[in-house]
Length: 301
Image (cartoon, rainbow, N blue to C red; front, side, top):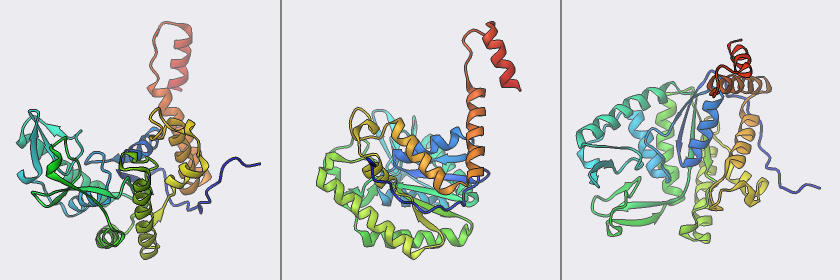
């Protein structure tokens, strides 16, 4: 008897251990990126910090592809620090000038990575977004500013598809070798309400369906959300808040992703690379101990 519903994912062994990867979007993309890095893959994570809604993610990608630099209009001051409306709160600096220099340098680096990448992994978190009503611009982060500055909205499938279609056409024209893997974060945004969270996820799923249909050779969908909702339908795969996936759940999704996109030979290389990296990173507490000397010899070999 099976106690979970196995999600069927067609194998597509196109990923290679020598490729370059970019991951952008919600915190779930960072978790997967961490596993990629543990295996020695060249994986760049969230140059703009964690982003949740499709439009903010798209804006960061468009700015990187077209090398659109940020200016003072992007910056705000809060608690003696400077932040960007287009970045996560982890991206800040002590002066406006230093922050602009930092985020525009990141644009240059993001552009180079994007044009040499084989795979772009985009993880959408929520279809809800916040509009700065005074600037009439979508923000990536509210940075704990007064609520009256913002209007919360729900993205429409048509708007998401239209805007991403334009970007994908531009991206494929400039980076013809690139493949895009779309995923939806399994994190449930229950502060929006249980029903609203489901509507939000459904909006994202419908938008991805259309994009995969319109770009069949370049855009793929990896069902991380469905894996958590069906294969891992148990709170033991979540953290203490019962909302965010825990290490066991994330590791399982990474395993399924490897089985989908890496051939058995490539997966063997990933396993060996992870083992070697763990050996090299292991910290020895008592270097003089016989066991430590033996371990050092094994590590050198």
